[in-house]
Image 1 (cartoon, rainbow, N blue to C red):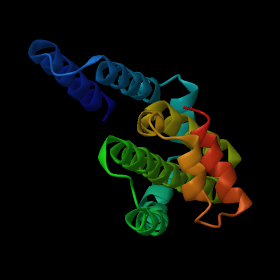
Image 2: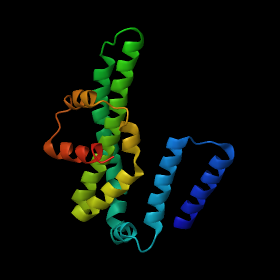
Image 3: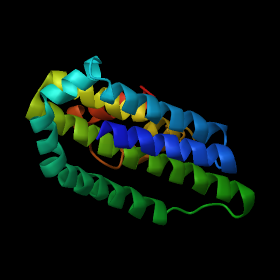
Image 4: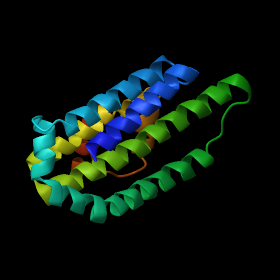
Amino acid sequence: MCPQIAYHFDCEKDYSDRCEFYDDLAEERFREIRDLVADICRKDSPLHLGIVRNMDCLNEVIEVDFKICYNYMRSKARVMMEYIQNMDFEAGYEGYLGKEEILASFSCLTDLFKNACLTSKTSDRCGSNVKDIAIEVLTRENSTYRVCSDASDERLEELLSLLNLGSQEKAFLNIFLYKG
């Protein structure tokens, strides 16, 4: 499977170079994902060895827990979205900025909830060492940094206060919030 994935990345890179499809940020993200895939596919890398050793358990997380985490994320998103829809924003540019700020924080948290849930399920099902593999992959995939770069700490706290999170949920969220 790794040769096909590498070929796909090479084709996409060739296309983007010829058509000037990516900006610098997208180029950097592409390179990060390509490096992650290369590390996963390199047979002697610790990441590859850890994934191969725990493949059955990781597949179980994907097959069983992915939908659970999706539903978990959606339930949290529903509470936050209801709150956002009931907010009053100023007219004009200031109101627009306020709305953009809260929506950026909402997007950030939905991504964080997905990653935190998958990490928690991996830890529960596969153990602490495999949890560390999940954190490495999800962190290096780097979507959280991209999604959370425009989020405001104040707005994140505002939305988090709606959710009555337990200490374990907060701990897993913080792994990704402060690791990007």
